[in-house]
Picture 1 (tube, helix red, strand yellow):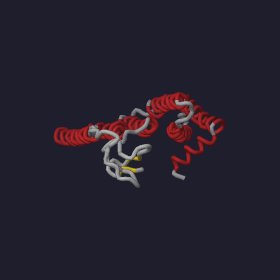
Picture 2 (cartoon, rainbow, N blue to C red):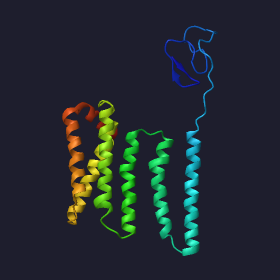
Picture 3 (spheres, rainbow, N blue to C red):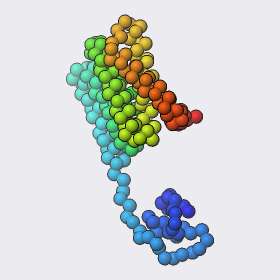
Picture 4 (tube, rainbow, N blue to C red):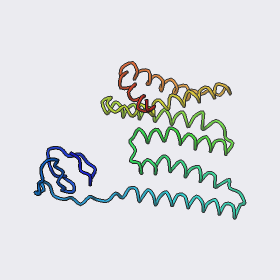
Length: 218
């Protein structure tokens, strides 16, 4: 049976355990089997909303001060890109109550973009795409594998960040090879990520394919 007030399914009872409403289909029972509970209001979304507005207004204020004093937005660009990264990596995931897989996926994608922006903006080519990003992906790859094994190979949501790391490391590998700047961290990340993907297809083929279809909405 289904309670229209609380939007929950109820088994082995003719009354909703949350609101106490009689939800029996055939009988009209007036006695409540469960007490009425006071549901605690959700405070996560209001806090995230306040923090998001604070992040936006502080960024706008920094841009205005930068324009007024230095007549440029060079410094504000760092703050703007960092604010965007903080929103998508932290605030948005907290608001959506994201799983570890989604959090790791956000870090895999957005943090390297911030590192590449800092690398290009400061004109210090090499430390980001050649060292920082591969080491970041390699660390997140190990975390994903450990979390997947810890759950007994049941939670295959971790396949999403592993696959994303494999694709991005391939793109990075090809890019660096074109400019003759291939480094060993990039090569190790590429080989480790694709080895993990191949092992998953070899030993957990059905679950891997099921997770892949779920991600691609097939």
